[in-house]
Image (cartoon, rainbow, N blue to C red; front, top):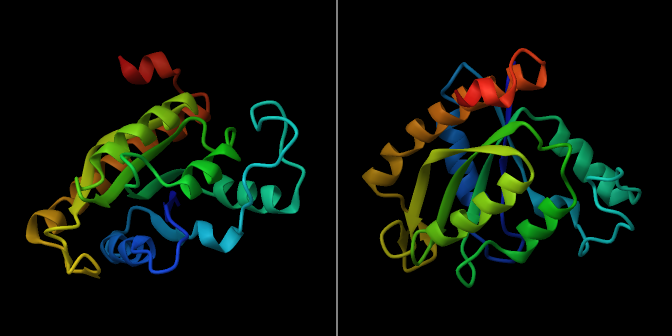
Length: 195
């Protein structure tokens, strides 16, 4: 069965990333068309990228690199929970992604973001990063406002529009994940999928 990782994007104390990831999983678990798991980047305790060569040239050699790579390689697609810091993604998420390339190539991703501007600017930055890694990212995004979807900026209380946006994002992630599975299996070229 198709496996989708819901990847947290923050490791700091008091973060909302894991709370939001669990909320997304509560919707995903109602589906029967894929399996969903939370992958918490905090569990991997990744130092600032410390490999001698980029992952596009050779697999990582450090134990933490191997563990992270192996975990992310298990999945067919991803949903990134993206918190916005200084108009971009967190350093922790960027660092975690820098450890990867072949694990993500020709797979699909969706986004659930939050911040003062609903995390939209962070998602735009993450789209550029994932494009470089040949990840097909979907249009539909769950955007959570710190002003509307969090009480006192700290208690997660999603509004109806936020709730209504989850399933359309999941639908697109699953559609594109299956398309990219066919690409990885050699059934189609990327040009044929895009046509």
